[in-house]
Structures are given as C-alpha cells and as structure tokens.
Image (cartoon, rainbow, N blue to C red; front, top):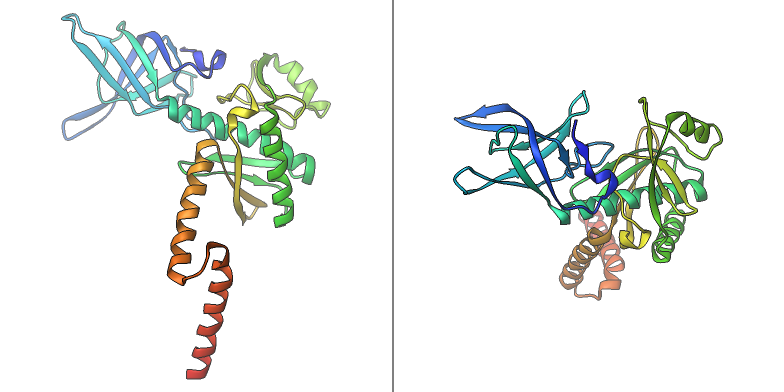
Length: 293
C-alpha cells in the first residue's frame, strides 16, 4: 500500500514517488480513464467527509520528454490502496513527481479544522454532539443532535470560535493503539471512535478538543483564518449548521455584500435599511392586493 505522506506533513505539496500499479477504469468514445497507485503519496483520498485532493503527476520519458498526468480524483479501495484517477497512463515502475493543488488542500484543511473547533465549542456551550460533517464546494455543514438553536446561541458560538482562532492555539496529531483510544473513550476524553481495527490517529486542539480523525489539518487555529456561521436548517435528526472558514469566509462575505448593495440600490435606500424597506414594500403590496379584492 501507499505510504501516506499527508499523515506526517499535511502541508506537503510536492513529493517524489514511483508508480506501483495501473488499471483502466473506463473508456468512452475511445478515451480512457486510468487509476494509478504509487508507492508513496501526498494526495488525500475522499474520506471522512473531506473531499479528495487534485493536482499533477510528472515523469520523464525514455526520450527525455516531459510527461504530465493531471490527477482528477483520489480514492481508497476496500483493501486500503490509494488510487489516483488520470486521463494519462503511466507504466508501473515509472518515477514520478507529484504536485498537490495547494489552494484546494489549504481550503480543505481550514474547513476541516474549523469543523473540529466548531463542534467542540457547540458541545461545550450547548451540550449538542455532532452527528455528521460535510465539506462542500462552497460551504460546509455539521448536523447536531439538538431540536433548535437560537440566533443568540449561534452568535455566542461564533464569537467563541473566532476568539480561539485569534489565540492561535496549537493543533497537533498523534497515533495511539486502539486499546488506549478505547480507554480515552471510556473516560469521556474522546466522544467517539471509528469502527475499524488498528492504530487510531488523534487530532488535538490545545485545551479544547481531542478527536479521532484521518483528515488533513492546520498546525494552529490561527491558520483557520476566521469562521462565519451562515445559518441553520431543521433536519429529521436535529439541526444542520452551515459555516465557512478562511478564504471561503472572505469570499462569502464579499458576495453577500455585493448582493446587499444591489438590493439597496434597487430600493433606493442604504444597505442597513434594506430589511426595513423590504418589509414596507411587502406590506404595501399586501394592502394593494387586499384593496383590489
């Protein structure tokens, strides 16, 4: 199996490896997609709510030409082997250099670490456990075992999370035997464990959270770069909380401001007066409809 370099260094974006296996996974109109296994890899496969990395593999042909194989997806099979999907085949034994798309990896690290911190603060302040986590292309969500959350509670949680981010607390990783992890679970130090055998990888946010997780994470909370909670949605199992971290938070705030500015211009009011203007417009429309009836 591949030596997973991202476990030791989540910030690693360039590495050398050798192709250990290759297989064709599909063929459409004469074009094939291949999956390549490497003896060592820094590409993260889709797992635990975190999407896969993308990037590039390069190699040198026997004639000296540079070969480039874009990595479109990365997945782990039932045997634990990591496969890199590409439209360009590379023969087994080929020496390659891998380049991880760093902006995508950094974004995933910010969102995933932000989720650990958000879940820990929600549990401390509201007593609500996180049931599941999803890291999407635009926003991320956690599902909580709670019937409802008020806006005041959300504001307090968001403030607390951003205070801890500003404190730049250390985020560390270590691996322990499953027996030791089960003892931590029994003591209440861990809230849950994955249903698998073998050693357990733990992610710890200094004096805040200890969690079993195989994902990639930042080295300190300051690297999360801030969190914006977008809102909640009632689900069958509880409450879904939508959030964004880091550059996503900045992009989302910029987009929201543009939308608000457009609405303010259309209504001929200031941005802070949009809500009041909309309420007034709705009331006038309702009164006019009633008068017509």
